[in-house]
Image (cartoon, rainbow, N blue to C red; front, top):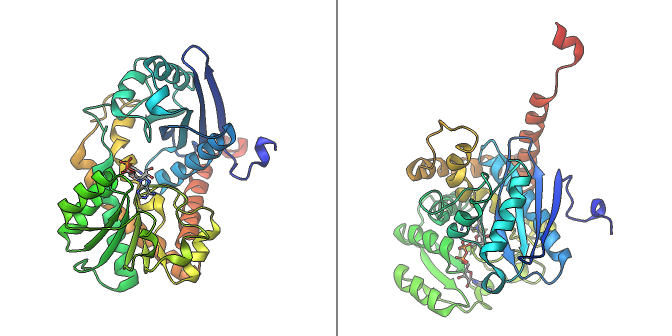
Length: 365
Ligand code: NAD
């Protein structure tokens, strides 16, 4: 199959493959769109079964970053790095330096950050080879508090729309995952009086979080069947699919995991079951908002740089953004996922027309 016919190709501006035989690096950097500004996106290191699987992830995740950043109202675009390899086995200093050189060669069109399989400390290593990196320790390194808070605000908005109550007291939330994002989300939900059920194959993580927030533990296989008001995916992608959607016993799906829909058509499958799906890239933008001020200092030396309280304040806009998207969905009788995509298309179209060079006639006038 040619690259341009790839089902996940969405007019990506630039996709590069990088290899460094000395360190064993094999990586793809996908830049989806830079109409609003330089592309930002994390560096995922994963033991992909094939190069094709890695390309698919790079294409999908970079596009999701464009959407996430545009809807968060930030002047940036979407990109993603995927490194093919097992982070626990194959990650080394020389491999991180090699990806740093690759990022530097892109000349600032793409800014790298941490993601699954990489850490703030890895960004410190990468920064020895490139200027275009954010998320180092002491800067916007841990994005989970902001992400968890944003997911909480989005979940609350979705509940208000679907169940007609602003209060989360007694609302039953089934959370898939007990990692970083889930932990912050559950703390907010617990404080708001929600009743929580948690599933994670890492039994220690599930047990620790359940104790902290007074949750019950459900097996990872049964979490889709849990009777609840909200199902909150906070672990893996593609968990909303033909097999799981018929099993859900909730009114709302609102969580932090990236790429929750296995395919776009699953947004319609959820709507057909009367379930309100809050698009993942609207809810989980807290991490990128968190990194934003650190990122602009790369191009504007006088910018104030990373500031956690500023970031948390900006994250509060996620509730209003989701409300606006749900309004569009209601008005136009489309799914929230489609409404969010339409809003992104409008934002990008406006930016493109602002950026168009003036015609010779109007430039002379
Ligand atoms: P994490 O690695 O801290 O936590 C993920 C948890 O999911 C782990 O505890 C893991 O054991 C668990 N898990 C794995 N398979 C599972 C299964 N089948 N059922 C239930 N749990 C399972 O990761 P995180 O930082 O909390 O991120 C979670 C999700 O949120 C990911 O999809 C990530 O891409 C997305 N996300 C994270 C951020 C962020 O700031 N950390 C930002 C945006 C999106």
